[in-house]
Amino acid sequence: MKRKIFLFLFFIFFFLQQSFAESIQLFGLIGDLKLQNGKILHDCKIGYRTFGLLNSEKSNVILVPTWFAGVSKDVISLLGADKLIDTTRYFIIVVDALGNGISTSPTNYSHEIPFPEITVRDMVESEYKLVKNILSINHLLAVIGGSMGSMQAFEFVVAYPDFMDKAIPYSASPKITSNEKIIFSLMKEIITTGKKYGESENEILKKLNIIIQLLARTPANVNKNYPRDKFTELQKKFERTSPIFTTACYLAQIDAMFTHDITRNFNSSFEETAKHIKAKLFIIVSQTDLLLNPQPALDFAVAANSKTLLLKNDCGHLAVGCEMDLCRTEIQKFLEEK
Image (cartoon, rainbow, N blue to C red):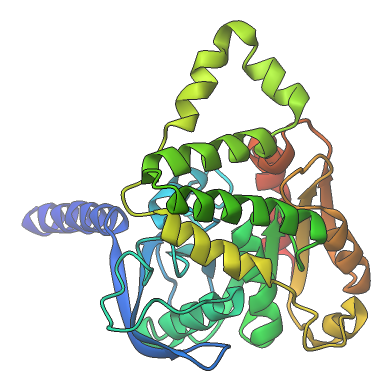
């Protein structure tokens, strides 16, 4: 009887401990990180959270990098048995991308020199060092990321083709088009002009939030969910600010995305780039995406002979969230494929 009670208490303690561990922000100290431009990001630290249980073979690991302006805590809503990624089957590492205010960013960089310009590839290099050197995991089952997280997923399969079996970029972009550069340029102009004329952080961030709300969904979706008599509810989203993701972080991550192009070392060719990739790809895009043009991802899927899912709802860049059941089912099928 005592043994049964002991085992029961042990398992209760174990699961409570696991639950607590999943709720806290962790950090990996990876030291000085050499960037693509040759500069050094000193004393680099990477934030992360883990979910689920690592199996004995370490073969069930999925890395999830954060989207633009997102932090690892934001991703929790996508994790669970009935969510986008099943935490009862997989060990999930959600990693905070450089510049998001949690990992090394302009707002927490204490070195004497200013925070240097970073790229999406630099984000991937920091995440690789975290997984391999800090967490002692030598291989991933998959990398799954949305929006700027998809850019990191694409960069990962190019930078470390043997490091993962599969990758699932969603709301995806393998390279930035001129249309995205217009959007990013407008955001940068709002920040620099606002700073020039002494606007507060919150005033500048409000304008940036308006742009995000304008482009995150289609006009049809906005009008359906926020008719004229509910516009005040939408206005509340304009006011949302973060004490850690400041305009300096905005600029750091925008500049990183501005140069994103996985074909840059392969003669700007999707076909040449695809030959270098060994992971199986499942690319999910929205036909109505106004923030990231879906066509480059669809073109790359053809060159790489990748599985695709084209969502045709009116949710735009947020299309995956509007078809969570379908996306969860298709992602699970893809992860189970041999």
